[in-house]
Amino acid sequence: MIEMKGVTKVYQKGVQALTNINLKIEKGEFVFLVGPSGAGKSTFIKLILKEEGPSEGKILIDNEDITELSRRRIPYLRRNIGVIFQDFRLLPNKTVFENVAFAMQIIEASSKDIRRQVPMVLGMVGLSERASQYPHQLSGGERQRVSIARAIVNNPSILIADEPTGNLDPETAWEIMKVLRQINRRGTTILMATHAKEIVDVMQQRVIALERGKIVRDQQRGAYGYED
Amino acid sequence: MSIASIGSVAASLVVLGVIITLVLNINNVADLTQMQFDSIQVYLQEDLNQNQIQEIGQSIALIEGIENVEYESKEQALKNMKERWGQQGYLLEFLENNPLPNSFIVHMESLEQADGIVAELQKLNGIDEIKYYKEIIENLLRIAKFIRTIGLVLILVLILVAMFIISNTIKLTLNARRQEINIMKYVGATNWFIRWPFVLEGVILGLAGAIIALVVVYFGYQFTFQVISERFTIVVSAYMISVKAMMSKTITMFTVLGAGVGALGSFISLRKHLRV
Image (cartoon, rainbow over all chains, first blue to last red; front, side, top):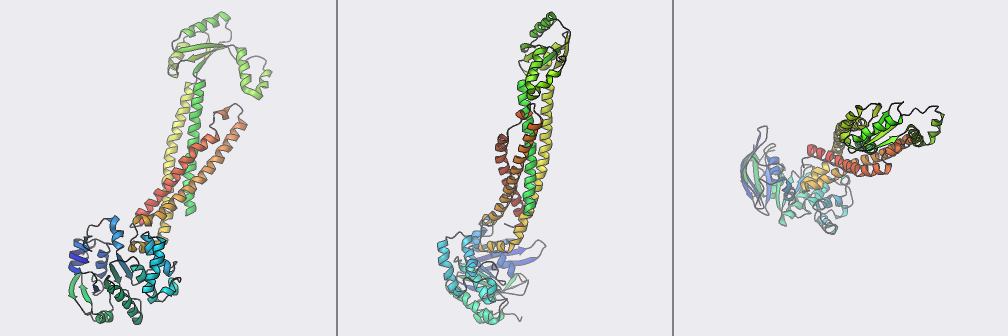
């Protein structure tokens, strides 16, 4: 599903963010991306989302070479990849329903499809009652669930979570992980960058550890491995 | 900022309108006068007898490039002037002596030959003055061209200013909606999907400016038309292009230019401030 071959990324100031990355993530996997700050996790994610292009190497998503993807086709790549962030990134002036529907409006889905699909994903994340409320009326955990709903409403094959539990207390964090696990069971490949040691240790999924731009560990059923 | 945008577009277009008005009217006057003045008026000296006058007439007729020659006696000249003056014609009755000379009106085959014909006429005796209008027409056309050139430069500058102001106005909206745009990009909105509201905003600003300019030009021209008609009874206003004709020429032009400047200003801003 996600494949990197000899990927290196050097930024203009000469900073080598990633060096010779080789990996393969199969469809349906749940992968944790761990490592100290500055190890290259953000760069890794940016490369998958085509926010940046690799300096060397090839990247394949769903068997399609996206290394040289034209600017025009990037939006279509991203429609197949859901993203959630540490800071949720919801639109404050739209209701929960509207925030999720936004993702469907952007791909010009019909009102009929929107009316059908949005309540369904809201149900999946357990927010059906909150549909007409605004983000500021929700708790952190609920906001993150709205983000998740928005990220999956268009049925992407990949979901990227960039520190999704960073702003949440441990109990809420686990609620989010339950939702993510459920989504993963339905077949969505999940890549989660995180500092949450406890979560990684308990989940026993594949762990890819980055240090200074290189993969130092790639274990199935791995542990977090750092002391922080 | 929106007011500044609309104002700058309106200002450019109003200046454009003024220039167009001037140029079109001058060209119109030149055309009309050219039609009426494809003739040379040859004023004769005061104390010629009938024979001498006839001789001169025959000599003139021999000159190459002349279509025909008409004789206008001083009495006839006075009568014609009285008619042209219309209401004020009665004033001429107070004249004790007829100050107008006898003259021959020489119709030329074409304006180009005027110089040659005038040279020939100057060789004849008994001629007091030769009035011919090619110079006036050429001067008019020269003024028109001058106004047009300066006008175009001015308008170009104003349009660039307008585009700059609009581009900055759009930048404000861009910044205000940056968060939303960021999310749109992650969710996979196409570039055009993100762009179009801003382009629309630019076009609307431009069109608003165009509408204001049209209103200003309309009332301004109408006012000018009236003032000229009232203060200059000699049929100057007949030489002016009608308000209706003027507006029909400018409406399409202003609308297209206004929308165009607005859209362009928007694009410039998008290109500079948005990584779409």
